[in-house]
Image 1 (cartoon, rainbow, N blue to C red):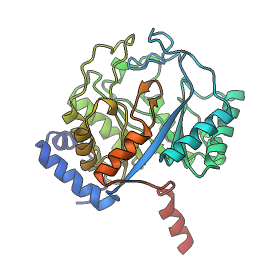
Image 2: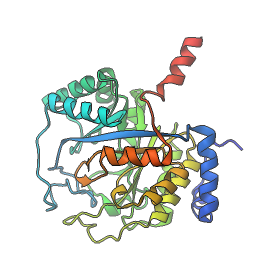
Image 3: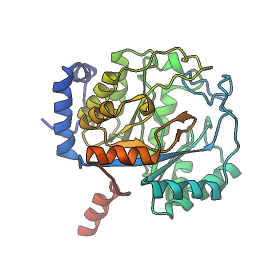
Image 4: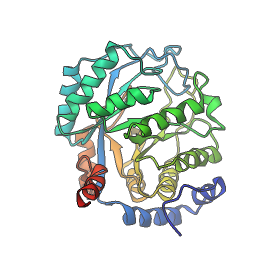
Length: 331
C-alpha cells in the first residue's frame, strides 16, 4: 500500500488513532524513519509582530479584543525590532522565524508594506520565514512570496463539524480558501490545530482527514495542546493528557508521513519524557523561545539541552526546497 495518500477515510484515521498506544508509536516511528531524517528537529521561533486587539472570537485566544485576558495591545513592530529578534533566534539555534499578527485578515496598507519589508529582511539572514496574519488573498500571498516568504501558517484548528463551537466570526471554508490562496502562490503550507478544546476524538481525526485531503499535504502540521487562558471562554478546560498528544502526533505522522509534525503550544506543561515519546512518535519540529505569541514556552537553551539529551540535531533551513532545485538542475 502507498503510504502517501489523499484518500484516507475518517474511519481509517479513527482506527489508526485508537490503535493500542505502544503499537501506534512503533508504527509511526517506522514511517518517520522511512520518510524523514529522524535525528533532525526543525527549530522555529515565533515573533508576535502585532499583539492583541483582534476582532475575531476564537474561544481559545487571549488576543481577542472581546475577552479580558490581561494581554496588552501592541502596535506593529518595526523592521529593525523584528530583524534583531530574528538574529537572536538564529544564534539560539532556530532555522525558521514565524511572524504572527493578531489580524482578522491582511489589508493592503502601510502595515502590510512593513510586513513585506520584514519578510525580506529576515530572509536575508538566511532563515526560512513564515507568516501567520489571518485570511489572505492570492495576490497578497504572491507579494509575500516575492519578498522571500517560505511558508504561510493558517490553522484549521479543529474538524469542520466542531469548528462552529469555537469560532463564529469566520467560516471553515474561509480557512480552506486561505490555504488554497497560499498554495496557488507557490508557498509552503503550514496548517494544523488544537486539541483539548472539548472536541471529540472523532473531531481530532476529522481535522487530519481534511488536511490529508488537500491536493497536496501541508509541508508542516502544528499540533497544539490548548493552553487555557483566564478570561477566555475555554479557561476551565482541563489540561490535555500527554497520551492524547502522543496519539495525535503518531496519527498525524501515519496519515501524512512526509509532513513536518510540529510539537507546538503546551510543551511548557510536558515533561522531558513526554516530549521524548512525541519525538519517537514522529514529531520533528518545535517552537523555541520564551513566548509562543502570548503564552509561556521553553527557552532556547533549555530546548538545545533537551535535543542534546535525545541525540537530536537542529535541522538546517530550506531543506524542503532542495529536492525541487536538484530535480530542476538535473533536467
